Image (cartoon, rainbow, N blue to C red; front, side, top):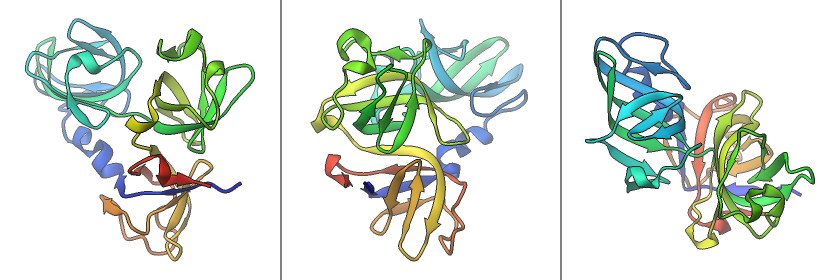
Length: 241
């Protein structure tokens, strides 16, 4: 069965991570790491590992003056949960990092298509999601087990890290009410067809014919293949068979 995602917005890698590439003033910056110096700017991208301020990959960021974007909306630190993936920009003085902004960004949000009998993987919006002992499951999922999700009925938001092969290693999974879902997928483009205005992320076919496009090169030919993108719809009906 072919699944198509009719999107309204697509953002390329520059828009997703460009704010980080220009923020570090030393160190080993990049996704999953933190950058900074004795005094200046600081940035981190990774998993929320603690609170009392916010810890990202074990690095503490003071959040007294920080703004928060969670699930695409303005929020607060109270909206974050352990295991969520975030990008932080701010400043560093000595050993103290202070966040100016914290943005949560999930890997996929939408309908559950299938769940493995052993509970170690599921498919959401055409994306294979791996679950292991490090994955945190929200208590709004019965038994805190993905085996209790109902394929074709339940909707989830998955935070995690996208591997080069497109598979998502989940760090946090929570169930979402159908009416609160904004279907979206992040991943790497393959099988781009500019004539049909389609490409694939995982096993999902994305139709961008009516989409707003940001931070992407010319779509001529198959030029988008391999690029990291975020594709977003408007409602559950954006995803159909």
